[in-house]
Image (cartoon, rainbow, N blue to C red):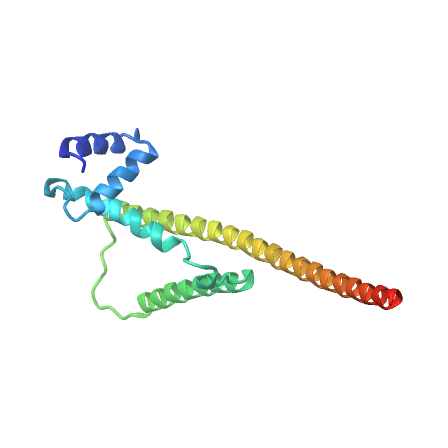
Length: 183
């Protein structure tokens, strides 16, 4: 078992980006133990998150993974954009068609800056999600190519097996003919 001081040193190295893969495994294993030091528990979610993410991101078997075609992914993307457009349109229409008797004050410069920050944050997160989706599509394409390659290899194997069986049957027939000639 690791001492509290050793774990604290590893944590310092970890947050400075100086740990090796083996040291990070030690930290992860330490925080996955039920008897980890209570004073260090504030760091546990970091390592539990990575462990859960690692387990959930990799399919357990080929049957668990059902790749979607490009058309399905593109259709889902277009549907998401269409849904967002409908929501924006509905909000815009409800805003402009409402009847008010009181005058709506124009937002202050500070309020506009806050709104701008939230919009920038939203667009930043959207760009990250879009980038992640593109990476997943690239991985899906790669996996699809690998599945096709394995399928082709299976067909070649089956053809080779059929040819081998045919050759063995011909050889067996020749041996029977030779035995008849010798008798």
